Length: 120
Image (cartoon, rainbow, N blue to C red; front, top):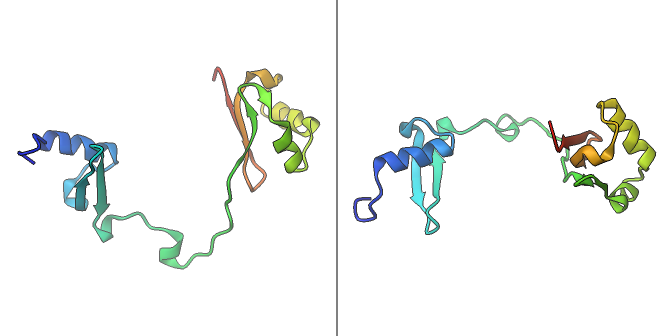
């Protein structure tokens, strides 16, 4: 670390950026050529996953962009068998009266519509 002029202060900062506030939870840390820090937590400190407790999960897939920068992505509506009327009804349910106010909207594979406004 000294040869690289890499301080413990900087190490702790990079750990915090990776949401690690206790260095004793780290099994390995690798300083990548890009300057990023890759870490592996000790097994007892890793987050629990559904696989760990043999809990089945459903397919999540990838969300489909429906609105980008206030413009409807027509082909994605059509691919999902949806119409502009459906979109406007969904936006109205969320209190949005104009698609131009929408910076980004995406349809999750479970049917939920995520909406982010330009000014919220």
